[in-house]
Image 1 (cartoon, one colour):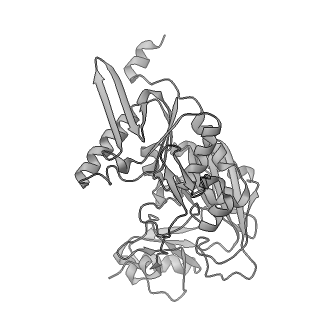
Image 2 (cartoon, helix red, strand yellow):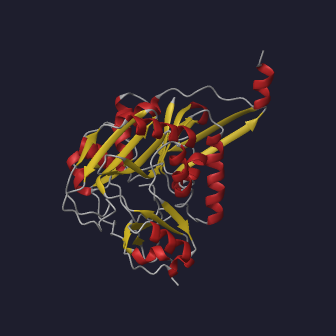
Image 3 (cartoon, chains in turn red, orange):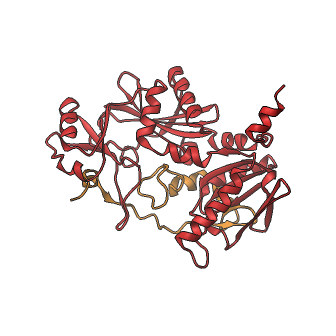
Length: 327
Length: 63
């Protein structure tokens, strides 16, 4: 049984997992859906009540029924590198590939439907609340007056993109940024705006969850850190990421979160305050983990490899089959 | 009439740096010029930051 990895060639973070799968003699087929019709090929037959599907890439051929797991890591848009790419071809290729894979019994990290839903930050915040994880007061609004009133209640705010996406043309980044007390909120009317109470943090936490395994790293905020440097991705602090223990209530909360979200993998970001409370910021369903492993030695890649290497369940029947088979 | 959040945008860091490894489709791994597997060189990965959570990616925002 084979592990299928969907990602780009340059994804050296995926390599970290492939190394472990190779060491365990687990067959791997790695491909980028962007290469469909130009190096990657597929075929599936639905005949006489059965399905036979195959994928090929890099001289390897794998049957869809022979997949134990699918790791959706950093796939390109289907057929993006075809000889004559188009939005239509991308849709066709995506439907063919993911439609075929959806019919397999393979385990997913993460299933595309669950992944799509899990990218919605407002949904994340609500799920975190329901799972008992502390969430800083947050508003998502296009009403300038609502933003003003929120700022009056919570004077120390940050703003961040709702989607986490970053604008292109020209390429720009929108880091989580502190909002000055005298800010004019009129422009809130021109786009949904996410404002959140700033957590006066003493550390950033990256908690990577793989199945039931919790791998947490902590990066302390220096006492003399600039309070305007909110986003750890842009902060200049040179303090290292170090392994840390997960408080039991947080452990229960994140496990409940992933179960409800139907995710096998999630990279949670928390801000730890002076009382030691971990405030939920977001859960990236395909968040980076290489930097955590490189800096802390936490065995994230090995844990992912072990999850992917587990056997696939039996192929599911249809609902009527199960009903008829019941005693 | 720019959305509020874009008041806080900054130019994305250029990520077009030349990487010292290339993909080997036989191994399904990236390898260095001397044949070593790039992922096995933690010091190199740390230096390059290619495994790091970043912002501003054109294609991915699951950092």
